[in-house]
Image (cartoon, rainbow, N blue to C red; front, side, top):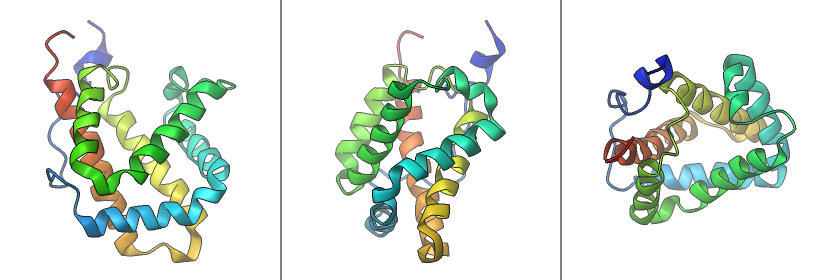
Amino acid sequence: MDGRRESSLYEASAPSTPLFRVLPVRDAQLVIDSFERVEHRMSLVMHFFFTRLFRVQPALRRIFPLGDVESRTFAATFFRFIVLHLHASSQLRDLLHRFGQRGMLDRVTVAEIDAIKLSLVGAVREVDGSTWSVATAHAWEIAYAWVWGAMRAGARTRTTK
């Protein structure tokens, strides 16, 4: 067994942010609003995201190799899908749970998930500019913890690992 499995999300402790069965409507709306402000500049958001991500977690190039347009396009599409479905959070939670059950988190550690959060939220904040607020930042924190919590819960229910 390698060190990666030892620090995988199967054994991760619960996040410090409380998880809800459904994402609070106000938080979902703040995240959607900020996303809609930057969506027309998504290529810039993703550029900032990957630049930040590889600066703090260069090992994640194993998942998003330089020049792998398909994996980077999937990341942007997955991000967009999740954000635009936050209002349907009970259905989204079930889908994210299934992603966790199917092993979507098998290749990442808790530290890498944190780096993804910091890089993603930082990229959106940078492109969102002067409209970014403390409330928006808090909503992104809640939403991110909720999304990854749903996936982590699914990963913990896997019968085969």
